[in-house]
Length: 142
Image 1 (tube, rainbow, N blue to C red):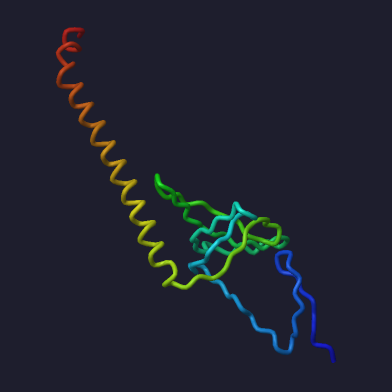
Image 2 (image 1 turned 90 degrees about the horizontal axis):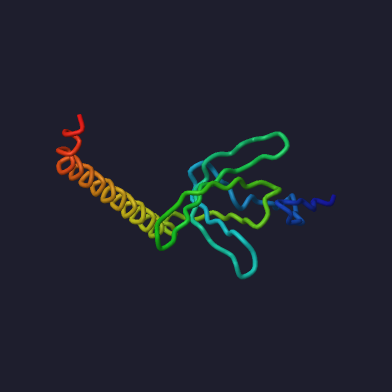
């Protein structure tokens, strides 16, 4: 009896011996993943986390939150990964691989928070100065 079968996963055809087949990747909500985005020389690797599995009848989808970092800060972006997704690959990622990434992302968020708090403090100081020094002018108008 022939136990081999050809299956297709996200456009990749594999010949699988069903008598010895093992599942390599199992994902669950909250798992850390690495996301390869792009092709050729314009590839980027992002840290991500699986947000949810959406079991659409026609196109089951995995929603992944990725963390994009650059010099100016960190952004969270969502990717919908399914059999029609082009230019994106995902792989599981162990916790120790992302430990430094986690602290880096948190540091970037903390820097952005501090920057916004400084901007708010500056605006409050300008408003208070305006009220103090221009109040006399507006009192004369009334």
